[in-house]
Image (cartoon, rainbow, N blue to C red):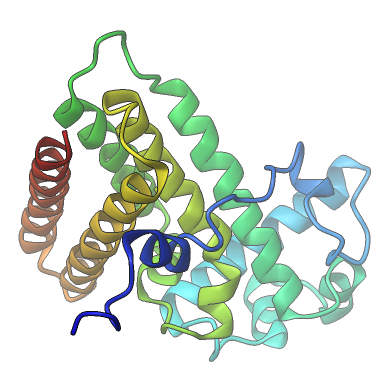
Length: 238
């Protein structure tokens, strides 16, 4: 009767099929072969930074699909040829921007290491606190990672970044429940992250509409949900 119901292993593999993120780049200028060339001098590095900053702003305001390389160049106040000097297309700019997000977010987590004996609730709250603080300062990050349409090219491009975040939640669970089977742990992580992502997306929408208090309240609820769900899930699994 229940032969069509997928197993925990198959569900976890489906949700975590891209679980292992690619290594972080050492430097922004070496992050991806998609760049036409890597700037070697300070002036070129500043130009690339300006292109990425402008692209982030446009992607946040208009959405990735609606923005164009011509608009990025115009808003940055540089010739379009300067953009193409480093990036062959908009997709290359996106991947460079996402690589920068990954690098900066990893550095922030490194600045907030887990203290010895950290309770589960505090550990999960720390992961979300760093994430939401960074997202609040980089609306392009929040909009792309949280609101990319499922199955879209943008969602695919953001998958490494999303998996970085899931890997941090997964590491917390591994530290607090080392005997829990990997497939079960990853299933809990995926379900928790998916639910939290939906709430954080609502928080972003509220903030974009000017309702800052509602946005903050939703973020608090996201933390409450993640801590409550994963705490209960681990308790039942033990």
